[in-house]
Length: 212
Image 1 (spheres, rainbow, N blue to C red):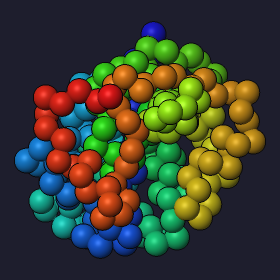
Image 2: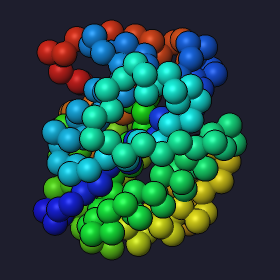
Image 3: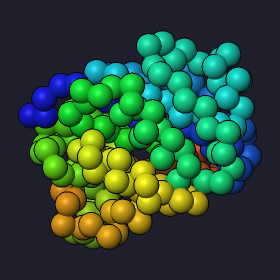
């Protein structure tokens, strides 16, 4: 088990351009803004503190979503892609929580994130490593690496230095596969995010539904 504290970082700065409904942080999921659901799952799963990166329509998110107790970082360069939000968020979270033993990075548009997924990743994480949720695709035995990701703080800082464009930590992960432990979370979530209108059914799953 990872020593506490584990800091959560939620990347929610995008404009949701492909979806066309404004910022995805305010999409309705189970009767409340999606960002609220994600924060609840991270806290319930073991994150002791949370930092949220906002960008597009940040004022609207702050006005309409309850982000109680979360640290807020506004990324004025959100239009350049996920990389700037990842870098800015990692640096702010680590500066605000110098005693953090791990940093869990989640996306702001992934309704399948649950406390169980977060708890499993935290429990499996080891110092000096990166722990990634893995999801098995239908008809395949292979795991697709996805989010959330749990970083050793030193590795998170290193990944932040390489983040650019819309890649986030991708370049660092591709360059350092030996540091990554993929944990199968297929029984807890599908790992999908809401990107286009075709993904909107992901927001209609009732609270008592079991992910398959």
